[in-house]
Length: 81
Image (spheres, rainbow, N blue to C red):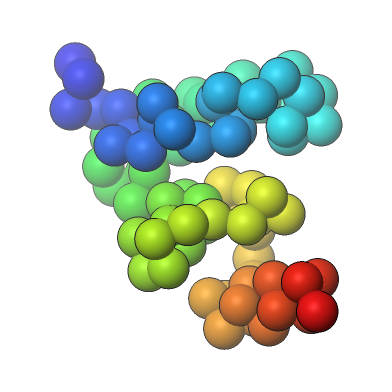
C-alpha cells in the first residue's frame, strides 16, 4: 500500500503543515486525488514535479498549480529578490 503514496509525502508541506492548503476540505481532496493515489496521479502533482526538477518546491505551488516549471522558477525568483 505504501507504493501508492507519493514518495514526498513525509516531507511535503501540504501534508506536514496545518493550514498550508487554505482549508481542510481542500487538503483532503489533494490527499485523495494526488498523495494517496497511484503513481499515475502523484506524478502529475505540481509539487512532486517541481521538487523532482529543482530538488525543492516553493510554498506557493499546490498540487493542481497550472504554472509551468519555468513560470514557477520565475515567480520564485521574483519573490526572493
